[in-house]
Image 1 (cartoon, rainbow, N blue to C red):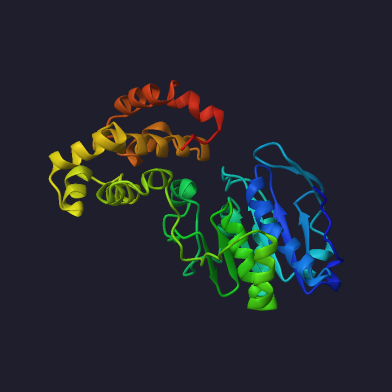
Image 2 (cartoon, rainbow, N blue to C red):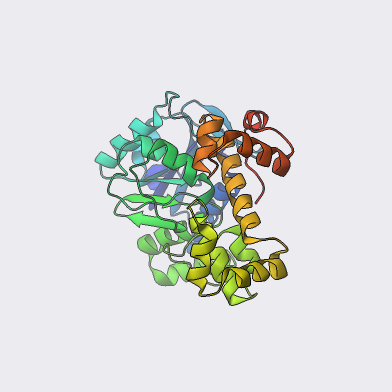
Length: 329
């Protein structure tokens, strides 16, 4: 992928700098670029420019092996209207990086700054998120809270708070960039861009992130969907089953039958599955020790957690953490 913008930044109507770090999500980056390219095609000229930069010139590797040529943090970045950092799923807050300070300086200069998916960890290090609305991908939420427990992210697909732009990742990056295109070129032009991208509708930022399980049961029993959606947000809390039954206004026995009929497992088994997935994410994204992860995921006894984890993933938690990979949904 070429690191250079379609036009020199100084000649563009809107100029976007993408700051990349190894492990960035290629889908998210591609989804962010597509509306800009489509806007240039619709306008018949290159009004939207973008370029890729990193702390060091060379190349940045995505999480799935793509390599993107990147420029250094040269003088062209100061010509940008917005600077978006796109980073990996595993934060490393102790690692020295010039990017947080750069984002803070650009913010103070009146520029728009933001983060796509894992870039939120770098943006948080800049110290400008307190009291702001921003989003974090649901699979990175636990790791984020482990580092910044006082920050309160939204669980929406993207957020725009004044000059701070954040996106949970994936195709939500397209929605965010279409929002920018609309603000800079108008609604009619945005419609042309959407047609070029083969998009039938624009999602507002306040659309909630949907859990994989919620997506799987959509269209089935409405009580089951309500139950799964509630558990997606409350599975780490005590007395989940009793509270869930009360929320759905059915008995615990009815709840058991509902889960067995549609998911072939008990509510307790479903809760354990969610907790173990969360533990796997913490093992792959943080340096928390196993006992702390066990406690955060609802296991009072570390030995019980290790046994359940090994049964679910086929490997001990200590060895899983060495893999540095995220679990399948």
